[in-house]
Amino acid sequence: MMKIRGIFSFIQSPDIPFVGRSVTLKARSKIKAGKALSIGNRCYIDALSVEGITLGSNVSIGNNTKIECTGNIQHLGKGFRAGNNVGLGSDNFYGCAGGISIDDDTIIGNFVSFHSENHIFTKIEKPIRLQGVSHQGIRVGKNCWIGAKVTILDGAVIEDGCIIAAGAVVLAGTYKQNGIFGGVPAKLIKYRDEPLT
Image (cartoon, rainbow, N blue to C red; front, side):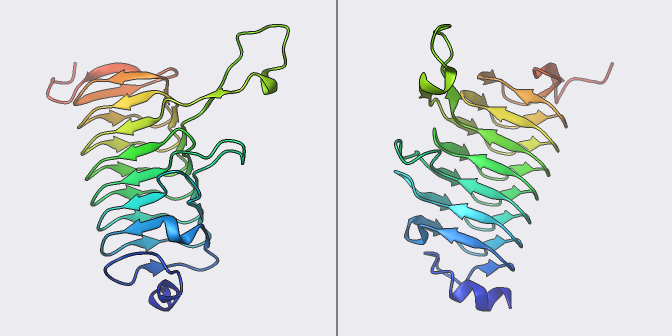
């Protein structure tokens, strides 16, 4: 049944994707994928954006995941890109207005959220909702592991080989290669090749 639903998904792909039950796909013409794409049940994917959604081969999207490329109709979002062999866990949220890029072989746990947009709040006398937003984007490198319930905010650059501990809040900034980061806000715990103390 997933293959049959994949035929009618109209996703641009060299083979037929696996598509779960009750999946919503918007702006389908802007979704491109490599081989062996799997989309879990009850996912919501809206690709309306400047660059759309590009998924590599062997990408899996867990149940109940939302990918929203545009935050509001006044500002067309940038889009979403995932490399090859990327696993996106269940119950995740990807807000892609400022752009989200996830490189090859990265795995992401459940209940993770990405927010590539931030509200401007510098004018005390003006309501925050009227001050606009900024978009720096979020980049995650190769071979990373993002733990369950992590929140990643606009401007975060997570370099290759990083581990983000469950429940961490990742603020704007660069998280150096092969580091293990955890906490609120996320701080360096140690590098992966260092012994435990």
